Image (cartoon, rainbow over the protein chains, first blue to last red):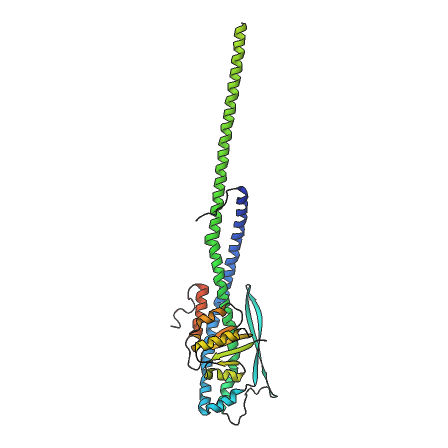
Length: 233
Length: 108
């Protein structure tokens, strides 16, 4: 692992140590987030799959009812009967925060024009067949499920996106950032130690030289004194 | 207050129209993509698209995955189930986990 390109000074070392602490802490948090997201996501995905299978099965049934209805009625009559819808569906989009992922929550209510509120059929009964009623009734029965599916699928997609991002961050910290910090810290520590040893040696050497000088001087002085004494003597 | 849209062939969307959703009938993925881009910014919360159209639109749909709304949900049309919806669920599992661990074998 290559180290960062920094000067081996004490200040950089302190900063790096601080950064390493942050990185390790961040790594732990990210890892926890990933695990928790994953836990939720797996439950959600399992549920999502089940719900989708259900919805697909019931939609197929609805289409079957519609084709039976269209077999009994002429296409023109069918078109006419369904041309102007009586209900309108209003959707409220709420917010839910799962581990700081904003997922939408859907809620709907239908508004029926006219007085009788439980009459959802947009046509009179004179020209239409009972099969069409069944088809529309079935559709309105499964609609809440379709809505749930939409919310769930969106949630799953967003969670998986977030999990992917978090996983990348965890890996980047674990395998690149943190080792790089550690390597650089080791490099700086060794460099500083080396400098320290160099300094020590230099000091010892200087001291040696000074001691030698002093000894030399003393010797010279005593020789001088001896010479003086001998000359007098 | 958001709306719910349905894009699909005329026969498939007929029923949804009667139920009160906004239906857009079209026959080719190109048309569908065109409609989708047009209505995506108009406050739709959910847009259902039939699977026959969806399976050739993955590139267009990609852009909406990261957005909160609209949620674009494939549904089977009158011409049957192409497995696009389940494939979508599978794909998100694969992306999150790195491997397909939920559907291993049981839908093959």
